[in-house]
Length: 221
Image (cartoon, rainbow, N blue to C red; front, side, top):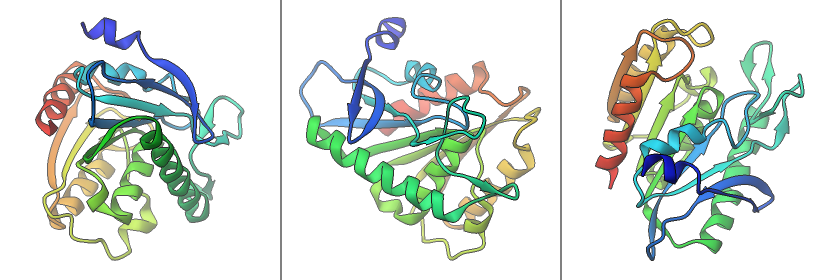
């Protein structure tokens, strides 16, 4: 069943974004899993994580709006001097808002069960979206991600038990596991319900992380 679900997605343009979507066969409203790819990725590279979500989920994976500087894939926001550029990050949040609105106009979405999953740079965008208005989400998943540094220095709203799953490799050569640990502690200090898991892998999700992701998503239902 997991492999069948993995291969039945449509490639569409919704709200100006190229995306992959898997819609449940049953009538809605559906819980929504929004998957955000990493730097130099596209709507296909995160699709492997759809295997962790049951048939109840409406799954959407949009392509980021910006070409990466190397032209190998796409980027959600720019980096200036190695740091997140706030202007393009805010533009990415607006892009997501427009995409979600267009998705809801096309599919029956349960507004109380929206989960945002991001890998690497996509996780940074998911964190930023969460910190802007945590009440919009039922949960956030960070896979090898990081909270943009400038956001950690701003006032963080109460997270009121919002579930957050953080999966990170102890051998991550792109984003240090120390950053993930600091993000975990920060979110817990603001009352997020954090599930944290480290695995001896690099900048990816290992088998143990995939099992935990499957379990965690099932609990959001």
